[in-house]
Amino acid sequence: MATSGVADRGSTERSSDTKIWNNPTVRGVFWQIVLIVAVLGSAAYLASNAIDNLARQHIASGFGFLNRESGFDISEKLVQYEPSDTYRDAFLVGLLNTFEVAGLGVVLATILGTLIGVARLSPNWLLRKLAQCYVELWRNLPLLLQLFFWYALLHVAAPGPRDAWNPLPDVFISNRGLMFPTPSADPSHKFIWIAFFVGVVASIGLDWWGRKRQEATGKPFPILAASAALIIGLPVLVLLATGAHMTLDKPVMQGFNFAGGSSFSPELTALLIGLVVYTASYIAEIVRSGILAVSHGQTEAAGALGLQRGLVLRLIVLPQALRVIIPPMTSQYLNLTKNSTLAVAIGFPDLVFVAQTQINQTGQAIEGIGIIMATYLAISLSISLLMNIYNARIALKGR
Image (cartoon, rainbow, N blue to C red; front, top):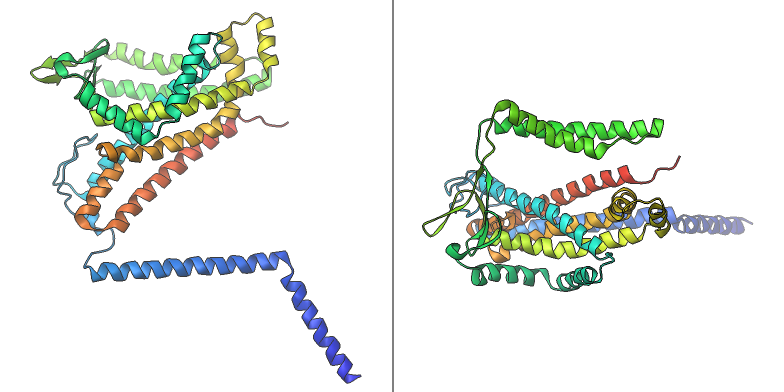
């Protein structure tokens, strides 16, 4: 009897252990702990190995080099910078150049891609086929190859400054880059910019108020026209009140090059054209699919009411298509920003270019690569956050 009791108790303990191990939650926690320990152990091994190798080669570690003199010049800069400035200043110049490319690229690619996407659905056969050829051509060529093509076109095929192409009034394209007019400097312009930002903030508040008013009364408010009046009207009123002269500083030929106005270097021009043309081909398909996702019955109903095609597209189709367009559009904005790192291939001094120069001079590759990764991660997360906020705002909400 005693022997039987001991056997039963051992069998019960083994059965209890088996039940615990068969619990999915217990197994999941156990394997997650194992994975975390393995990852941390691998990271610690790699860090220790890197520190030993750096010490053996007498290479300093840490970010103390940021306070040292950089000793190299940057051809394009949005802020004052000299070779006697620090690496921190050099990284700031590269970061601002990256922001310039990404910001201009996103805006221009969105405009061009939307136009091409709408043209893909045009009843005009020729326009529709031209838009299709554009998409099929540029979407199926590697981006790096396109950058080389535009860069070579500007350097080899483009004429010199004296014979520069003149596609628009006071806009010139030559092997020196893109030249265009800009407003002449005036002390009162800062007040105009303040009025512009006040108009933007006021239009956002007006949009919120207009939506609440429509939900309460059912009466729509002309938000688009009112916002345009605020954003454009306030700066114009400030311009008139201050008596400032809004004159343009135009590029003119002097000697062997243009003087006046502003210019984009051949590297920046080629980079922008390549990124915009390539990304717009994807955005065009996103816009086209978003428009096709809207029920055709709604466009037929709008046509039966006598609405013009442009009004149907702007008031009925696009607001609904945005719910389909925004998520994949976010991915294209992220891709454009990350693809801007290819600027180093054609010599544009963005963040990657500055980091590469810093690595060659100091040998601190881990820190340089870390700065690049952290910066692009922060930019990508910021873009995702803003687009997700906008996507949540326009999403259909249940009652």
